[in-house]
Image (cartoon, rainbow, N blue to C red):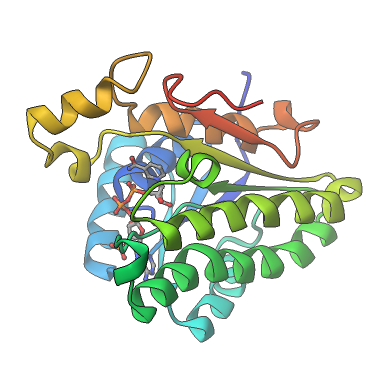
Length: 251
Ligand code: NAP
């Protein structure tokens, strides 16, 4: 079967979230064994039970607050201790704290940089050694179309996502000779609980900017992650796969 992840292990951060849950389902359906991570233990446990009921497999949950550096440093060792290996790292967790630049508080900047950028750096750094020892690995980070286009009210978020894209290119060059690929998936507007809360006028305004005239689905982001995590994507590294309905067409 193409894109099989049979026998592989993966850590997914933000696994109980809108896009993270789609990624977890997609990887589990391809046969991967998962460590599901998030800061909310109750949400995570309920999600893991549902995932196992729906797809089967023997998945675990590891609670970790990504705003806490000490906890972040423990996440990869805990994953390897629990699963035995870690073939795939998916940096999916992310938050927004939107504000116009002139009103943006230090705390809004710090939180977004800490969770969306710094935690990803720590996880990538920690994943590099075991992946090098294993002579292979996959790192996929979820960025955003706005990390490439900019967006008013999101200086912090755009800085973090553009930073993550740049970090990915550097690490991809460091690890390429070891058969470890490092890539990003950049979603456009994806239908989640957050976008469901918008009214019809707001949704129409968004859809008007998208050639496909609709928001994307979590499954459509997850399919891109599955591809980049698979053996078939062995020759693709340092890249961003854009999943945005044509909203922005990057070279
Ligand atoms: P979401 O539903 O809000 O999920 C975010 C996830 O991040 C949650 O599972 C949450 O887990 C986790 N998280 C938040 N703060 C955390 C912390 N301090 N420590 C550990 N985990 C934390 O968001 P989403 O829409 O699925 O977004 C997933 C990724 O896609 C993000 O990186 C986002 O920037 C990106 N993205 C989304 C869209 C979109 O349209 N939705 C577009 C482009 C990019 P807990 O609740 O357990 O803390």
